[in-house]
Image 1 (tube, helix red, strand yellow):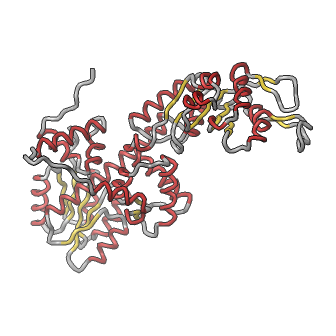
Image 2 (cartoon, one colour):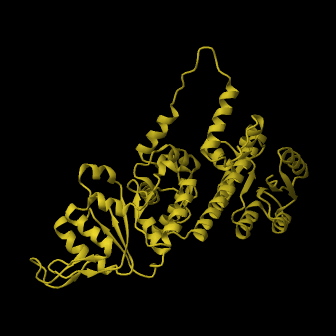
Length: 459
């Protein structure tokens, strides 16, 4: 059972304090009361409530000064300010100082409860994201590979196992899924971590130059070879060679790569005596190598030699629950890079991110966040700042229609089935399911109890 949320209410009018205490207790919150800012600050320091609601106009210490002090000693504690009509400018000043929201008197109680729930959920999400990021950094330390979804946890486990060996690894996945990051993670967790990690993009080096780049050449081997040159395999001696886009490697060089994989031997261009190198090979591709083998464009023996441990990297659309964590990390990095710290992203933006298919995967998301940080003029990134192709997907999803039967439906059965499928989709994680359905966690729990929905026992 989750701990009851505690709210500190600071107000100099006794009758309003009593009404608040009754209403908030009725809504399921624990309530602390203070008659002015000075007492409110003392209670805050002693009790560390989950949220503070304060009037702005009070004797001794007003609400703005209390807000400053709350943010100084407990910056993550949300503060909601109450103001009378005509004091909107003061409320705006409070928002600039970090208030979560403001409401004008007389209050609409339903609106207050919505604002409280929103502020507490945002605090929980911020804390959860911080804890998840700390967990990843402490547990995995995998060179900025970010994610806590089931698919990513499985990936971390495989990386940790293969890193302890020298076995060849083939990374498979769409462009932008982070294959080079995974390759680096394997290298840095293995026994070769103190030696070189050399990346070779097989599709970026012109074919006439590729052999010399890979294996080196002797002086005079060809026009322009005015000195002896070590190739990238020799540069990586004792370490790891990452062959990116291995599917682009020409057939004649596939034979020579196979020889390196089999016994570590190779020839520099212009030499006849083999050289030996000790390297680990990690290859990656976004192509279907098995199909290329059938077509005769990739050697079968090389394919089987590389494909000892294939690791499939999931596309971003298959692990959408990782998007908030990725966005948080990219936003922090871009904020520092472009000197725009403190930028925030409106909750509505995540609805668009969830619907978009991300053909460019994590790389596309990272590039988008950098673009938004540079181009957005306000301190909060909203849906209006998003490119049209992302907004178009969301709008299309919002216009979905359903073919309803002529003889009617049981609405509660439909709702029950939707909630059950959402829970299954999110591995029965209540917070993520609530976000997926765009409802509060308390609402989800209520409906789970209403429909007697509980996680099935795993055998």
